[in-house]
Image (cartoon, rainbow, N blue to C red; front, side, top):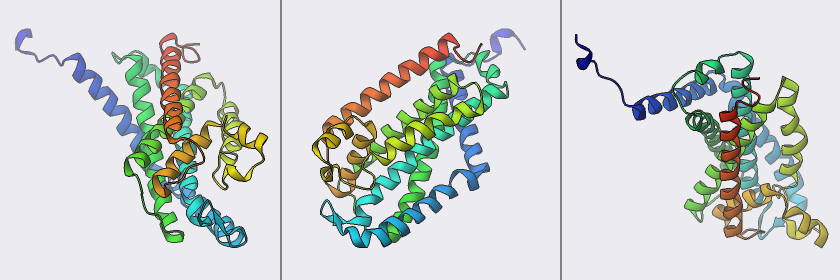
Length: 266
């Protein structure tokens, strides 16, 4: 067979195959250990609904004009999306660094942005899957009616992308497994619990309410809650501006780190 007869795939096709391979591998990893990736969030959400929603919620009464379990349901869904999107990418990419098979990607013809996008889509897949599981659990305990479907989808996708990018950056700088857990333990958990998941910031004194608005998770949770319930403690437009800006900024940072090989080629 002559060389002219050999079909040479275009660079666009090569990039698509590489991107698809990363995403499929991430999906396979999620499903292979589904007992660790999907089930814990469902169990945790059930416990939150039973303890906070049922037992404590009876004493709290209504929150923001809604039954307490209705009020916290969107926040619990978003909380699971945040932790799983972040956790999937930070563990997967750091595992690739630790196992040295990240070098296979580095020597491939794939540009850095394809590699970053592949891992981010993997985090998005897990975040959306877990979010769906927790939504099903929520429907057992609370009546949820979507008021603005587009806002629900946009908020959950942007939030998942943002924290997947955060997990990627954490994995780039992490030198050991302890450093992988630092950000989720000392940053994500406090921000999530103070992000309006279990309460309306209108209940807080003025200084605490002002401080809460600095927390980006507050804006994400409230934009998502607005999609379900039609109420929000913050401007929904402002929330989306913050989310879009954060997604672009973190993607640029992740891309630059990947291109320079910081924490990867050291």
